Each structure stands twice: as structure tokens, then as C-alpha cells.
Length: 355
Image 1 (cartoon, rainbow, N blue to C red):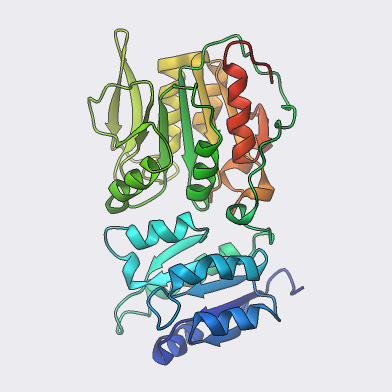
Image 2 (spheres, one colour):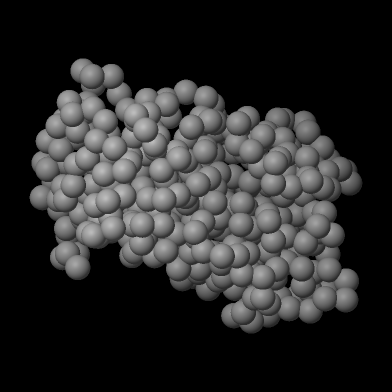
């Protein structure tokens, strides 16, 4: 194992020029070490069969096996290394980025033009590699078989006598496969509306909504102001506003809040959780999935104070245990579990079911 300050990095890009530029950028940070720089996915897989790495920086468009096709094999071979997709295909619209994140990539970054690799891009790239590389190595959740056994006992009492009226989910880095795992195990008899704040640019949201729609019979919509919050629906926060729910008599409606959040995130889960606390009280449930930072912690505390129930994703299945860790460490969470187990735990709210 390397020292705590050394992150082993593999570069996978068919362009020798790009690899040379990236090598110079990465090696400017003494905490980062280039352990391999290869031109194809096949070379990457051959190296990973023999040597460990912490972070793989992977291009998408390559001759032979492209990055998207190679990603599941790299994750399996890399035994817990994080994959950062660096591709010009991640620049607009989001399909390639969402595909990569769904398959288990930890993060994506748009590759700049040939003359734009220095300055801000270099800072962002090395910071993201550092953040991913300093996380404990774990077998990615996407490659583990789904666990359908009963979830572990909660660490705090859950009042299953109360109605389940709304489920609010917060996620960031690593959250896309975590949410897919969650929704796949959620009992179809649970029809409470789901609000989802996933940290993604606005251009990605429509594509992500269409992708979620392939996983569930629920109707999936990118939230817009004035929409009625209906059972059997999933509402995604747009990338340029906070998703909140407001009471209008007995009706619950979507509102979009564009005020800057204290934590700097947009969209932010804090306003979402706070609004669920006000609109649903003890009928609200909050779920905090994998992500960097502590977005959602303050809002989850308000939901808990209003009588709602909060769950956090367990560290062993997270890409980054930042957001769920902030909730778990403060004692807000009723349970800290893997996403599938959280979904199964929500079945406890169904009539005749016990946790």
C-alpha cells in the first residue's frame, strides 16, 4: 500500500499528446503518482491484472474497446479503484456521462480543447483525483450482487405506525448507481412520491430522467414549478434550482428555489429536506446516498426534528461517504445501510409489516 499521501493513477487515452499533457499535470502534485499511461482499454486491463491502482482516468472514444464498454471490466479488474471519465463527450447533454456514472464511474469531467489544459482545468482534475484516490478502496456497489435478505436492525426506533407520505433522496458522487440499487429494491406497493436531488448539471437531467424511467413503473419527471406532487411519481431537481415542496391547502406542489444555498450546492438537498419537514412532518422520509461534502445534513436534521425518518448509506457501498457520513455521525439517521437495505426497510411502513 502506498502512503496515505500517495495516490496511484493510471491514464487511459489513445492520444499520446493528451497522455503527455495529463502526465505533466498530475505529476505537479507530489501526492499523485503516475503508475501507468496506456493507449487502450486492453492495455489497461492487462496492467490491472498485475498491479493495483487507486484512480483510473479513462477516455471514452478509443479504437477497439471504447471507454463505456471497458468500464465494467476495468471496475471488476481494478478491485475498488475509482474511475474518473475524462472525455469531450461529457461536455454537453449528458448521455455519455450518465451512462458512465450508471455503470459505476465515480465522476466525469469534460476534456478541454488542446489549448485549454492548463489553469483551472488542471486544478479541477488534480483535486478530483486526490479526492477519489484518498477514499478507502472498496468493491464498487455496481459489481456486487444485490442483497435481498432482510436488512439489519436499525440503530434507532422507527415509528412504522405513521403513514409514509413522501420520500426525499439526496445524492452526489456515486449516487446514480446507488439510487438505481435503491429503486430496484423498493416495494412496488410503496407509492409515496419520491423527490430526488442528484448533483448534476442541468443539461444532464432530462436524459437522467429517461434513464430512471427504464428502471421503474413510476412516472419520472424533471421538476417544474407548480407541478402537483402525486403518488407513483419521481421528481428530479433541475440542475439550476433547489427542488422544494409546498402545501397549497391539501394539495402539495413543486416549487423551485434559486436562492444560493449556504453550502454552495445547486441543486442542494438542504432546502428539499427542510420543505419536506414542513409539508409532511412525520410522514416524510429522507435518504442520503453517496456524495462528497455534507449537503443534506442540515435539512435532514430539520426533517428529523419534525418527526420524520432519515436513512444514510453505509460507507462500504459509497464511492464517497461524505454526505451520508455527515448525517450518520450526528446521530440523525435511524439506520445506516446499503441502498437495497434502505429500500427494504421502507417496506416496514406498509400495513402489516415490521422492521
